[in-house]
Length: 289
Length: 338
Image 1 (cartoon, rainbow over the protein chains, first blue to last red):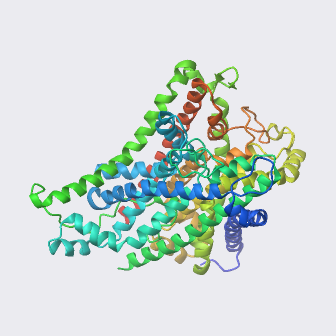
Image 2: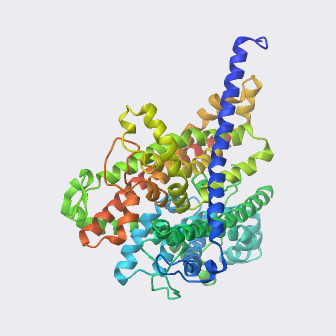
């Protein structure tokens, strides 16, 4: 055995120390950007928050005052519509993968495609919805924006649902089947109930994912400086407002853009953290049993 | 895979179910009249699973149909024409394709070493009490919406690049063609750095998952022989997971190629092809974001959709490669354990 403190030993130790320092530095590098961005967001966005910001409509260009209530409500409405469209589709598709398809070629193909769609450029999905909905209907609409976001949600919900259903032990299904329950009832009453918590958090993650999306809304829901509750009309959202306001020459609009940016980020990060903690808890529980 | 699945990026590593316990015996004989709800429920789930499959075909087909006008007007030359002139209705995709590829390539150059470093830190170095918060923080970096990166990049980061980093680069490396032109802060380099920060969490979380697949036995054997942590990483972990690492890089590349809002704010939006990293440029997605709603003629819209089709094809190919590589390592690991 080589004597401790020999040259070769010291070189190996030194190489190890350098590489470990570099990997620690990488972690710091990642954290550094997160904190830098959050610091600037809070610093520049907080002054924009006021009662008017949350309750008033935007003022004409260059006029101070007003708020972004239309964008806040628009973002909530479009995200809610997207959830209503995307979540049922995703849950049923995920149910097929976990309960029926399993190892079949079709199931593998669906998994493959949904993993690709998860990372597909969101702007391309915007173009797609423009072509199938905005052009034929001859107008931008909140519904088109919601459909674009729903298409982004579907693969995420599909895969989460499958993951969660797979945590359900087969013994549970077999026990229910042995009692004479039909399989569809077993899925609805036993499997879904068992993973309800996990699926809810999965859906929350998908919502957080799309709530900050801007690119697919640019040419689907467009923008609207007024109240709008008609899903067939253009609808203002915080995200598109940020894009328009940040590029504008008005200081007041830029401040509002920072405020909107802070609001969106807080919402998305808070949802993500809550869902993340809950997900890892269910999965720990699942893997223990 | 013991790691709890966290983060959208992770879907890529999640796998086909292990060949575990056999599927529960299902009621046989579908023709039995009492089985009608069963058949219906199965058909419904099958329909929606098929819908996911159809979705990707529909996107490709619709884009192709709408891009047809541009391709029949300009021919395949559209792909390598440099000019993009809405006034004279002369469109070529080359500047946007060039910007897309170069900005993503630069982003990968920056992001890969950092991501590997973070993954090594999280799996081999950090004490358990540090793993969770640091891991969560990196995931947060992925959750920050793209438009926030863009806006922050334009107002906070670009001025620092313009005032400090780019003048320094010009002063010391200005003789290279890479650092020509005025230091404006916005341009290819700023876009690539922001892109890198955005894809770091994706590459990190997959690499970390893949690292976790290395059998503890293999690592412990190496430690037992007296290997240092770095030697274990270099000689055991990385060779064992090479396929997975390449898969993670391709996934990051796929993300970078299609990223829109962050790039649109900071790349400068000029349809130029320049060797200099300081000069403003354009990507396919930033061209779409900037010009789509302003496009007035059919040919203009069709040319933009043709750009979208090109982006869709490139990312689909890259992401498919990523997916196949990640499937391979998963099978390899499952195979070697059993």
